[in-house]
Image (cartoon, rainbow, N blue to C red; front, side, top):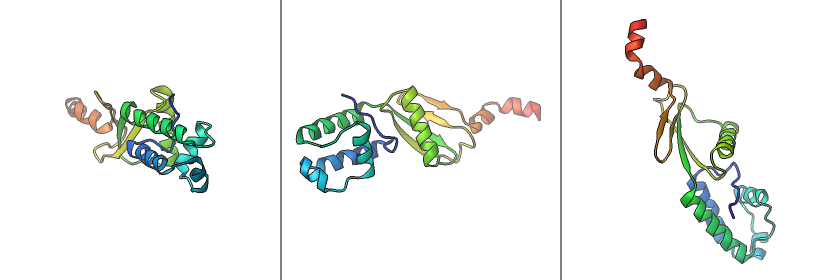
Length: 144
């Protein structure tokens, strides 16, 4: 079964952190006594999981390991980093349009004046103003 990821978990490192927290939970009794992270609370709520049994814990760890291994990952380079609301909007759109378990890595790149450079496993899509200007230098020189 594929589990849905909350919008707060967008990177492989956040997914690994969620896995480590699940490993630390040994029984359902312990899970109730320990304070869970917001990410784990959101993950459990989003997937309608109440009590974490030892069997469910193993299933969740297996599913999260498979997600970390198989989920598509996109890297987006932007001129400035998005705030929390923008990041949530971006991951919501990407997960609804591309893949429900997509992982996203956002980096800041000063060469990206405006727009974005999007990298997937196999392709790079450069939608930056920097690229548009420098790919048309001859046209720009003619216009000037």
